[in-house]
Length: 460
Image 1 (cartoon, one colour):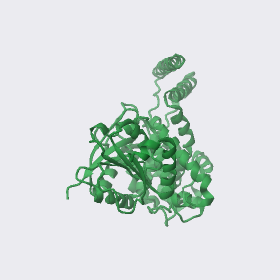
Image 2: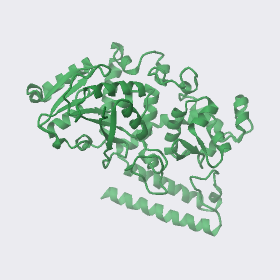
Image 3: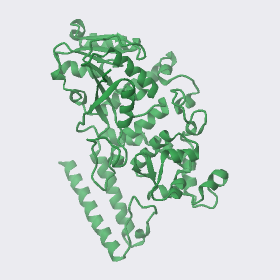
Image 4: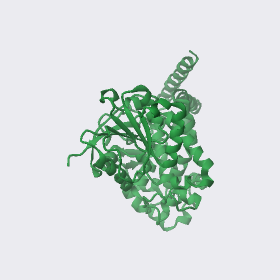
């Protein structure tokens, strides 16, 4: 009852304060701000009492968000603020705001913006989408952006040609706010995106994480070193914590498991110690499971199951097998290949190789079930049918209250040089590997990101 009371009080504060602000605005013939405006529009705060009322609305709105977001989401949003800061630094140093100002109201595609700054267009689009989800810039069409009320605060007011010709004078004779932002953001990392040797690369080792470490090893290989045992264990626990953010019943709702015949084989590809399979084993005793991963992970998983679920192992319902993702798939009678948070670790070419091995081992009736993020655009167009779209004036992707997937996208760009995929990305990688995307299962509570994808073998 206490939380409901807080909810009602906050709602009342916002409603009454908005009515007050509208009245003041009307009496003084002064417009209220619009997020999509390309001017700051702060004149209304000169009206006596308006600034305080606006502050009350903002405070209540943020507190309301903290009340309605889960604790894991709210705290995670603070933790991942570093990625928003890094994204903002990239756009500041690439003069994105000034480029968009000269582009005009139609905006500009990320590829065109990136070309002016010698960046990678696909990576810049992801960075700008994260910022647009937090209301800095606006995505008007897929990968096409314009300035808005917040991004114009970063405008030096100078011609783009001058900024690139004389970068050392960028902040001379300006308001100083873009300089202040740049000063604070110097502690974030954007060097790999500006370095011509890494800016357009999709190699796993050409990312910010490797630059920080000073090593030429993929992250997962670096984890395997004995000296990184403690950090590797921290990462394993972190993955468990990330999974806890998702709905507990997601794996159960990912597929109509009850419809599978008795003794159907589920192959949990790169399944770790079998966390996902564990839920299915308990709920569907008629199924059999093969959990595949690297040898040391399989050994650890086997120990856990022999201790906690010995019957599943001794009966043969569950078995662990060491398997390299880039080797031919040994199980040839799978009803389901299950891939949970696997593909986002790999760029396009590697993901294709992994999926081709599964396609070669698939029967005509095998279904590939992928549990991964499917990022929606921050605009209303370009998203797959069935995508949950927020009502206006909310951002179509629910904005900052729904930023988990975009933060993860920048995280894995930084650590693995890979990506969280959009719907067209999944279609492309699956088709290239001989699979046909059959359907996306939209599940309540996933925030439209972590969704099951069903794919079937493409006809030969």
